[in-house]
Length: 339
Image (tube, rainbow, N blue to C red):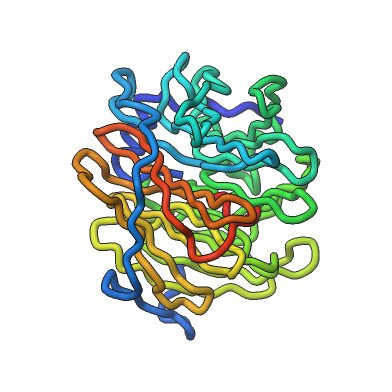
């Protein structure tokens, strides 16, 4: 497949500053729900450690894509890390240390997931429109998918896998132009077939399966809403509707994770907090940072420990990139690695 032109990191940093971290367009649909910050309870998140500082080369840092491997090790990406700085990190949360897994080139990784099919780490490269895979230690890097889908290149943001290892991607195409050109894309696990499941979306961002793999939640950054795609055999869409309206104020809907009870953890770009909803759209809680929050602007994503309720949230801003922890409402599963 044809290689895509690179978006310079300086330009990407400008995009991130505007609206990027990692969109249904219908309005007024039945079942649409509104929630406010007063709904639900407040969950306090504690600081674990600082991972990054603002990069002189790009003018910012933006942590994303927390994901646990099968051994319970946590991986995190830094979207705007320049070449030579850690773009993918493996974090030892117990000892509060980390090591670089990848520092490669001009990649701008916005999410990370481990495939249930081949066990490799898959990353969305927003800048180059590629899906990359590598071994857990960063070796054997491969371009899994690159090129056009239905005549248009992707700006892949977040990623989720179904049980068979097929990929579901939020394509944030149109973000830089302020146009509703985003899509939800399905790519077969061999990379040979790509289908558009939804289109004309407003900066598609978070994407995650529900607890039973019956449907796909996805968020729209510039519309502050979460939509639901019900899926049939081989990922065919059987219905679609706007599910939740997020009253975020200056904040926008970022990445999504889902726990074992089907609760949605919606990251917020523009506010260091996370909104938690039940699968029926009820606002259950707001995750807030404990202590001083100066220099922190976004809580982009979260991963919940499989089989436990310990959650790790990526928080960033001019003050640097941090990991925070809180107790989730239910246990973590594969869908609880924010996508």
